[in-house]
Amino acid sequence: MNITEQMMRQKKIEDLYDVAVVGGGLAGVMTAVSAAREGKRVILLEKYGCLGGMATAGLVYPFMRHSEKPSGKPANKGLYFRLLKEVYEIGGSDGEQSRHYKEEFMKVVLDRMVTEAGVKVLFHAKLCEVECEKKTVTSVTVATVSGKIKIRARVFADTTGNADLCAFAGLPFEKGREEDGLCQPMTLNFRLGNVDWSRFNLKMATALYNELQAKGEIKNPRENILVFRSPVDNIMHMNTTRAVGYDPTDVESVTAAEMLLREQMIEMYWFMKNNIPGMENCELLSSSVEAGIRESRRIVGLYRITAEDLLSARKFEDSIARGTYEIDIHNPSGTGTVLRHIPPNDFYTIPYRALVPRDADNLIVAGRSVSSTHEALAAIRIMPITTCMGEAAGIAAALAIDGNCPLADINVAELQKRITSYGGLI
Ligand SMILES: Cc1cc2nc3c(=O)[nH]c(=O)nc-3n(C[C@H](O)[C@H](O)[C@H](O)COP(=O)(O)OP(=O)(O)OC[C@H]3O[C@@H](n4cnc5c(N)ncnc54)[C@H](O)[C@@H]3O)c2cc1C
Image (cartoon, rainbow, N blue to C red):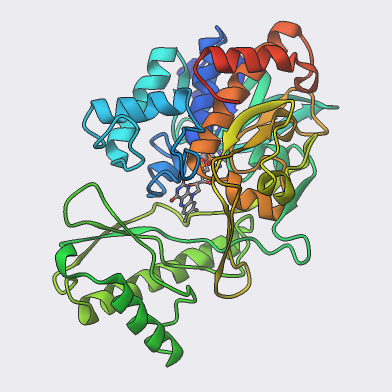
């Protein structure tokens, strides 16, 4: 017996589940909680030491729009609304449906949600191997502090954002723009403290930033400064760095991007501190644990969501979630951001088929890596939508188990009935 086997035996971790969810971002947590709510034995495997992914460890903030514009009619509810409410109830936001949250509170709410649902969670568990027999995934192996652990399940969910599970299983995927494969730039979000908002003028700051950029004194390629006001007094959330032309699925490229992004963070800090009224006393507080990835692998699913589907507010027969956020493409090869709007007081839908990989029977995907074009992903990747996708994926996993059928063959009408019975919108 080698050392890894010895450690696994000592750990006595159950290795057979109904559903194994890999990736504990919002999509993964909701997949796990939702499958457990259907009575399934679920394990959730997460590489960080907390749940929430980009929403917590990734310092992404706030939730982008979850309602129709301008009416304000909600488009995303279900477990997403429960999450907002519970974050509010423990002091993590200023309202039951507030999109502005404090991530430390959200981490606790997510812990409680999985615990209450009876989901087995392993932190610091990074997917490293996938075994398949024909179109069936038979096991995943995660590297942990206790050694490698192999988990078997009847259905697997890939909620890694990067479609790691699908890629390691050898399934086909797309990446980046159709013409050159380039992805939207990565960004390291960070926070500045001691900000005097009463004297801060974004327009003035951006004008000076652009002037120094033109002189070559600022290297950051982003065309403007993007800041958000934190719910905590005097804290500025900055979403302004940009690593353009890097590949989020190439380990060397990601490493180089992260070092570059930290340089941009320091550049921005000193630019603000030395030049901008209200920022003289600012302090650099924290940055995301890793570069934020807007786009990487997208699975080849049973349906590929297109920009046209979103811009025409298409209502799919197999809709499992809604969205209202616009197509928001940060230029993959230079500077600039393109925005394309959807019709007012309307919403588009996410078809179930976009969550189902074409070439696998017992695998479902939720979150950033569902089947879509580069343009469509630029809208549907936002957190209210990925959260709702996760809720649908968990129910779908349960239906596949109960029906003893591939994910592609589940009863979609029943899936939709259950989503709406829990308060979700389709
Ligand atoms: C810079 C930036 C700014 C953004 N701004 C906004 C915004 O303002 N509002 C908004 O709503 N959305 C925003 N988004 C989009 C949004 O944050 C993401 O698209 C969304 O969070 C994706 O959710 P997810 O659950 O699919 O993936 P993630 O949140 O990325 O979760 C994936 C999880 O899987 C885990 N994981 C990954 N690989 C493995 C592995 N191999 N083994 C085990 N675990 C693994 C990760 O640790 C993570 O916890 C932004 C994104 C970025 C990058």
